[in-house]
Image (cartoon, rainbow, N blue to C red; front, side, top):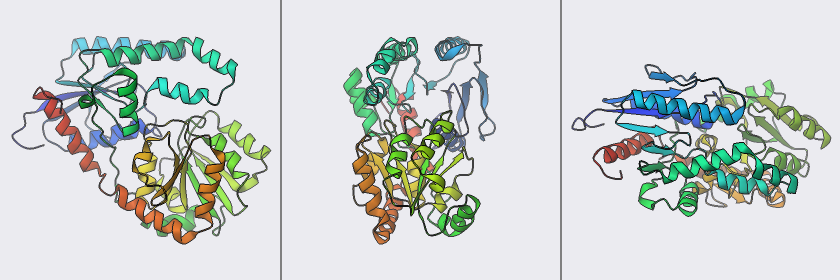
Length: 387
């Protein structure tokens, strides 16, 4: 932040923190980067916070609740009460709350997510979704937020999300800047392969000569673990899979893997704080997601020199040049997923070349670049513009 810019106060709102969550990792990175800029006073409003960023002002909003509907409603009520008590120059929410200056659409558009999920459900599931009080609340909250006159900008983490918000809610395009998350390109680097490959594979009993796919994320259903396991059954025994993430369906997915006869070829590690060794051990990052606005793991894996195989329903498709730095397909097209992975598994030279291209693609997306884009947006809003 240059010396001519006046200091300002920024409130960031995020309800829940999990050390394995993509939105929370974005907040950790953004706050750390912004705190290094003089004059930005950040206050975090949350139920609980367990991040690594030090020196933050915090406001607690943790009313009791029963079920996710009352959880979200109670948190929204508490946040609005805190905002009436405290004055901030800018209020940025990472939750669907009406009345904020900015919203970061890290969770995408709920309407679109439900439509994508409906493709996997029978009529009973679609009916249950339509009648769900929780989903009806989220859809209404989303609509109120985007229609609220105070909303001045929506930070979109992909062009996919930007287009969805414009199409579904008519938000003016000038209010929809795309600011990609930043990635530490020194921490996530192709050198991780040399440093961690042998050690990590030995730790998880993965043979050195197998082609290892890596999946990282929570929300296994939404991010495509079921179709990934089905595809595993069609790949040769020299293809193994490591599933990294904390999810309440982990046990069910392990049982499904056993029913498919995958044996030791699928390794479920649970949530891992140190993910660098896992990128170093893998040959390919695979995210066949049903809907994901833009997972941080895509940036991390590409920075580590891994080609990305993902879906058109993933915001990371913004960065993929099909056949050059990764491969794409529809989230439910198992045949395309099988073919995409087989193409790279059978051609190690091409796989390595795609990994190098993936690294080059994300090298400009540094934490510093993200911080500067955010600061430019904030300063533009404080001057009364659109950023």
